[in-house]
Length: 444
Ligand code: PA5
Image (tube, rainbow, N blue to C red; front, side):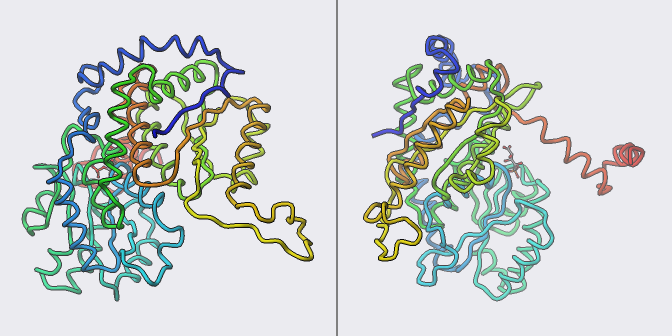
C-alpha cells in the first residue's frame, strides 16, 4: 500500500481539467530530474538516493549507532537547517511523545544543538550534560556554519574536560564534506569517525544520507524500513510518472498558486508530525521562495491550532490552501469510558476510540474550511511508521523538484540565505569583513 493524494476538495476553486493539463509539462520535468538536465542539476544526487543506498552503508551506520547507543545516555545532534530538520522530523514522528521522560529506556535521549544561538538554551544544555554520559553527532556539509560550529566548540570542550582524548574521539561522529571545511580538517586531525555528505545532495534533500540516517538509527528507529519506504516511493513515482501522487501534488499546488492562493498550510492531526512540517517548510520555502515568486509554506498542528489559527483559516484573507496529512490508523487504542454522572456530557462517546473523535474533528474541519473558501489537498498515510515516513519524505522531495520547475525557479539553490550571514559577520567584525563592517555601521 502507498500513501495517496486526494485533490477533489480543490475543484470548487480550480478546474480538474486545468490540473490534468500539467501532465505533459510534469513528465518533461520528471525527465529533467532523472536525466539531471534541469536547473540546479549539480544537486540532483538525492533523486536516486533511496535505490542507491547499499547494505554495507546501512550496516556501517547501524554499527556506529550501536556504539553511540552503548556509550551514551544522551546523544546531542549538532546541526542546523538541512543538517538538522530531517533527522528531527523522523525521530519525533516515530518516538514516544514523552520520550525524554521515560525512565525504563533502551535508547539514548536525542537532543539538539547548533540549531539556534540562544545563550540560555546553550547554558542549560551544558548544565544538563555536565554530569551525564553523552556523545556528539556533529553535522555540517560546509563545515563552517556559525551556529553548529559554535555549539560544537562548547560541547567538544565539555567532552574533553570529562574524558580522555581517546574516549572523546570515540564519542564524536562528524558528518561533513569529503574534503573541504573546518569540520573535515578537525575530524581528520583528531581521528573522529566520519561520514560524507555527497557534493550533489543539498542540505534539505539529505535526510536519506548519513545526515538523517545516523541520528535516526541512534534513536532506535529502523532505518531499513525508512529507506525501503523511500525506495518504494522512488519506484512508484518513476513508474507512474505524470500520474503519480507527487506529480499531482506539484501540479495542483501550482494551479492553486496561479489562482491567487499564495500560502499553503500543512496540517497535521498528530502532534508527532510537527517537525515533519518544519522539515517540509524548509524544503518548499528554500526551494521555491526566490526571484520574488513562490508559495509561502506555513504549518499548523490540529486540533490544537483550531483554537487559535482556526479563526483566520476559516474567515481571514482567502489567499490560502491547506494540505492535510491524514493518518488513517492510530498505532495505539484508547477507549473513552462511561461516567455515571456524565457531568461533562461525554457519555455519547463512551465506548468509542479517541481516534474516532480526532477523525471527526478532521473531517468536520475539512468541510468547514472548504465551505469557508479554503481548498484542501489530502495526503493519506496508512499509518505512522518508519516505512510510511520514508514514503512521505521522498514523495515531498520529488514533488518539490517538479513543483519548483513548474514555478520556473532553480529548486536546488538558496542564494537568499547568505544575506543575514554577511550582515552578522560584519556586525561581529569578523576578519575579512572590514568593508562590510564599515558599511553596516553607517546604516545604524
Ligand atoms: O538547505 C541548506 O542548504 C541549509 O539549510 C543548510 O543545510 C544549513 O545552512 C546548514 O548548512 P551546513 O550543513 O553547511 O552547516
